[in-house]
Image (cartoon, rainbow, N blue to C red; front, side, top):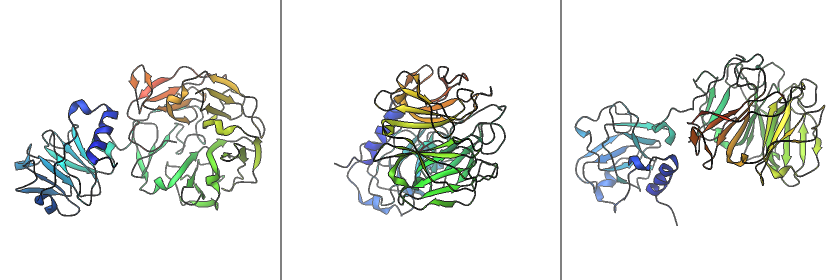
Amino acid sequence: MRVPLLRRLATLATTLGLTSLGLLGAGAAPAQAAISDCPAGYFCAWKTDDGTGTMFKTKTNVATLGAWDNTFRAVVNRTSKFACLHDEPDYGPSASIWAPDPAGTEWGYAHGDPSSVSFVATERECWYPSYPGWYAPTAPEAAGFGDLNADLRADVLVRDKAGRLWFLPGDNTGQLVGRGGWNAMNALVRHGDFTGDGREDVIARKASTGELWLYPGAGTGGLTTPRLIGRGGWNAMSSLTAYGDLTGDGRSDLLAVERATGKLWLYPGTGTGYLGARKLIGNGGWNAMNALVGIGDLNSDGRADLIAREKSTGRLWLYPGRSGYLGPRELIGRGGWNVMDTLLGLGDVTGDGRADLVTTTTSSYVGEGCRGVGCLLVYEGRGTGTLYPGVVVGDDWHGLNGFF
């Protein structure tokens, strides 16, 4: 059975803990003739519960509603964006959300007292900025690993649900570096310089074709013209991990787990932007892991290491890097790591010269200072291959579509 739009919005609000605020319209009534008067591409509202009488319409932001202030009762959103109905003028923080419905087939009652209207690309933006807050202090040596703009701060790339890409340089600001289309990729990884120009790059896999694309870093946080480095077949891999330098030749390498066999393959970087002939470094069993992270040098032996999360147990394993292969694994997390949604290796995020682990959480997470979806934690590396307990450093990492 198809779930009505209003119920879907109510379910989202429950997930975010917002139902007590009465932010969502509900209880759609049978359509009246006047509802169909709303033109395509507009948001419309009426002062009556049944959508009759004088109609308000707009397709642009309205900071103050004038005679329509606090009067919306029936509403329909025929735009291609989310409509935010703010309880205060000038787009105050409290808002109900109406999803895009260009056909105008779903409408309902406006709860609250709207005083302004805005249109945004994603649901998140009715309450929060387009990107989450991210801060990292200057590190002794960050450039080339987790540092896209070479300012010695670990930074993050964030993809939103509209398919845009945001660069977070580590000073609590953000920059739009991809205007759309990134949702076509079902894997996005970064670690180190694949082109040999001293700038960190991004590798992406296209879901529809299994092609592998390299996006060279511009050195500013942005990306330049992509190049095709894998013509197809990469959807046969269940995971891709930009590792850093495993072979010891000073070039960044890529790891991939083969979906059908669970084998782990090393694709060595050539320093030209392309990958060399693959080498088998894991005979099987790697499909038991549901997260692989190129963590950098976690044990201070001068080689980049790999962290893997075991799906069935939630345990965390360290695979120390050797020259072209991985050493015997070491248990560094006894369980509970499945409450983490994303595991990120960003190099040194605390400024002490040691590699750290960053995570975002699922709805199952309960911790001091934050619980549920969207908590951001930093696990500081000890320099011995182990981690200090995680510390919550953010709570607005939700309503997005991936971090790397």
